[in-house]
Image (cartoon, rainbow, N blue to C red; front, side, top):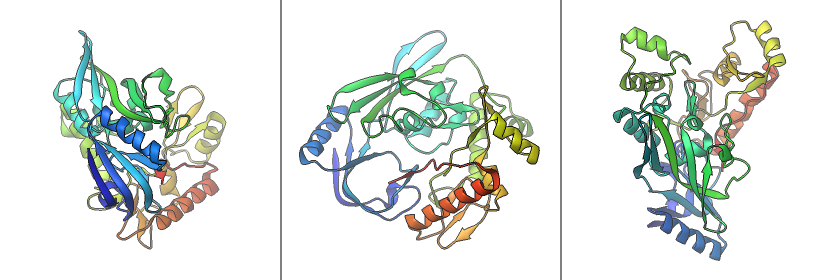
Length: 337
């Protein structure tokens, strides 16, 4: 266990907001976590659990304890002729896990390459990209009840997954801390290449469709359109893509026939928030110390020295503009702290 007092969070949030925490604690085991939680409960101190800070916007100093997991081990829990179950520590870097699965010839995670954050966040946020979501490969989630300190294992179904949603994000928010996630990956080749321009990029490169080539292609696409937080502070995709009903979709497609969309079940269509924001003229927009990325308008950026108030004001301006033009309310994916 590592404990820091009066700790700067500048390097712990990818937006680069300069705030501090009274205490920052990193733990390496479930036993250490339960011990910390007992101490926090006894002292009645506020606490917050974070990953790599890639989906957070700190509005002020945090007067309490911030927890961070260093549990990173990967264990095979079950294996058959068709699949492998991997139990992964919540503190493992997400893309390191994807790279590991690809190197072992396991299918299912490759479309989620190069998404920032840690394994624990994949189960909370139900991260997704290029037609795949974490829920597609999550078998179960192991977590600690912050009130009782007891371990509970949630099945995939019990996690109540839907688009960018889980039970840990809403119904049980702040009640459980995820310690391990078990993924079921396939030994049988199965690719999903029809979302976005993945297949086209593979064709242009003249690549065979292999795990390694699909992963490298997706990394290339993401690097070309998303800024590196080490160079330009950002929290990745700031807004979720809205899903609209068929009546609203028919109204929009009649008015905007070139509007991109993706079918979501029988009764909904997902509209790319980036397209909506771009249509409102925000691509490359700058105000004060914040702006909208010049290539990917879904990303808000810290131009240098920005504070959370500037970011939230720009986000609200975008939300209002999209609603005024399209009658759609887009919702931040980033968590305001």
